[in-house]
Image 1 (cartoon, rainbow, N blue to C red):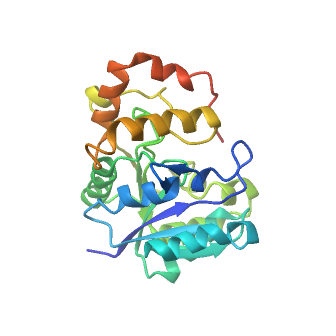
Image 2 (cartoon, rainbow, N blue to C red):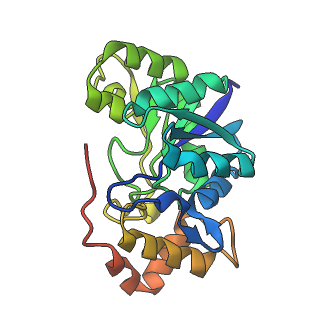
Length: 244
């Protein structure tokens, strides 16, 4: 199989919750917990944290070294180039694009997306073209060559800020595929992403309820918890999700 790596876009200067990727949870930085979850994906050959060259992101690079995963530093604004650079520097043929906003990402879902990408032969596959999974399970898979081609075709700063935006907005150039959630996991309005302090409180609660007794808990476990404690959904349900 072609060398497949997960890239995690992560930086300290988030506008709504600065430093969120290193906020402690269960005695570990959030980003460390996300790496731990991605390390359970069988088809990944590596993980690379794609951070910026800014001094503020030195702690992110230091964490990557401590975790024994890859790290690539690039432009804060040109995230497309940063992720492409991460893939090229680590000899990746296939990129599984994720962001540090997703510490609860489900390894089973990531693996499903990789396998569907391999089986389908499409240029780009994700579970966000039609959102059926909760926000925070976001997984995008595409070849490094496809990202390089997209980067060569656009100088639009918006495209370069949102890595794969140009790819999935141009179906006339690239073939696209989407993975839909099975009925029992469909909950597209649920926020399991880390962008505000309210999001952090919910994610911290999920880890505190599930992690110690089952470190590899999955989305089904999370949804089961929220069904048993419905008040938890109210913690961040008022937060508006940012879209491009």
